[in-house]
Length: 251
Image (cartoon, rainbow, N blue to C red; front, side, top):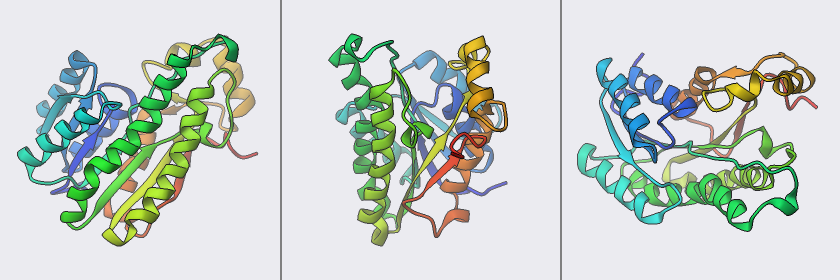
């Protein structure tokens, strides 16, 4: 308990899945949480859960691909709580198509904007404030797709590979400012969005053939790894990638 006491954390994509699990865990560990998402009804639901358990939370509607939205979120956070200690760049999407030639360029660009460009915008938006306050921790959500290409997801795979190296570039850029930047790479993870696939015959076959543990991870199992990277327990770690995948990348 209290591993994040007196810390202020921005969590994007916080209305569901890993983002929501991380927000609840951070609040339980003493953090003040700024929770952002484009889905306002679900955002309010998660914020209400945190408040009911005694946590402090500020929910904000946020398009992570919009630079102006990042300015608004950072200003609101600093105006309300005085600082930013942690940024979890969690928001992400994918758009599946059976064949590359069927993927509209607009879809490819949208995935890259939400999954990769948003992380650049987020890092740039919080860096000055974090540096002024003596440093902080940024965690970028990548994926095992940052190591192993996936079929029918070129935008997603490119974005997650890009996230991995963007993280390392930012880690080198801001190390002397005591700003740590790391990435996390989940494998199959059960959320409300992925459960229909994971429970399907195709999903079960994929897990059994590609995952030595033979099961999907739970959102809380990813959240606890994010907590480690956010906390002072990982104070000598920057520019690294933590893989949480049940052995999927043991190839």
